[in-house]
Image 1 (cartoon, rainbow, N blue to C red):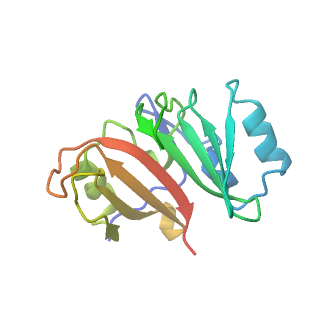
Image 2: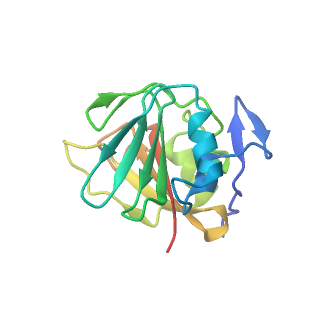
Length: 167
């Protein structure tokens, strides 16, 4: 059994256990004072995109996306490594990443830390390869997209990380 890091992030190689991560807001209402305060203090402009049964808060300068369910609760948080996401350009997320992850990590390093993925995408030439890992003691899922279209490329680095609660 691999050890499962808790909701602690690493920024520039320094562990910051007391840093509040946006994943701590998963499951909270968008009007929750903590969620509103976090969004208000991002110091960057955000765009809200509404869909029939969900919405997204896109923060291109912060390199982050918050996904909301049909009850306006935070469903997941996506941390981006400076790339195109949803057809739009985003800067790299500069905050602390969850579960001791860093964008420089390779798939091999991630799997050494968390074990084999629970689920993976079917490789194709259209989309980058992703894998899902159970993290934070089994409470969360990390969907990690790698900068490759191949499932065999173990030295590919992280393109983005989506964190959501396991049901």
